[in-house]
Length: 232
Image 1 (cartoon, rainbow, N blue to C red):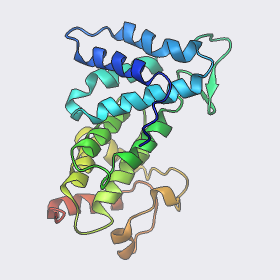
Image 2: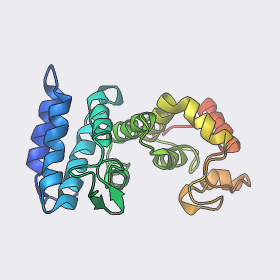
Image 3: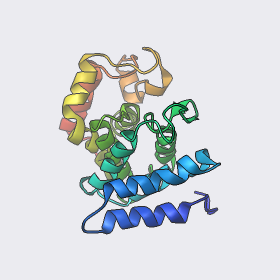
């Protein structure tokens, strides 16, 4: 990761640390303090990119069960509605502030680069996946990222690291019913041959080529998990 500090990085780091460590957090006040620099700044895009980056960084430092305040913050920002002027929506990368949570998905995808093994060797990867899974439960959909993690863990090689298994487990932990629903509905992201959600090497060897979620794919994951997914 770059050592150059983006604009307001110190501000958002201090804001989130205070919110996450105080005994009685002020969610409404934190939302206001988080949103104001973005809404009033001339460089809203850069500020928002920095803000989301710090949210994800803080999540990466905490076990998923300890991320409730961060999940609540993101949900509250989404529910803030169209600000600062509902009559003149502020659009960033084609998404409306705050209802579409612009740049959050892009920043989360960045995390799939810097937080994934072998870049990290601790609980960072599990924590980031747990955060994305918990946001998905809250209605902020990161299902494609979950599929990427599960594919990497269970479909690419018979030897899977403990770090990868822990990350994949977060999706089954928080989204058991949702994964089943998506699979039964053959949920796709960009068609049945979408390369982004295509099966991994082991599934392809078994003659399965459909992208996205499916009952066959879920059954395969469950079988791998039952077999113990041979660990290094």
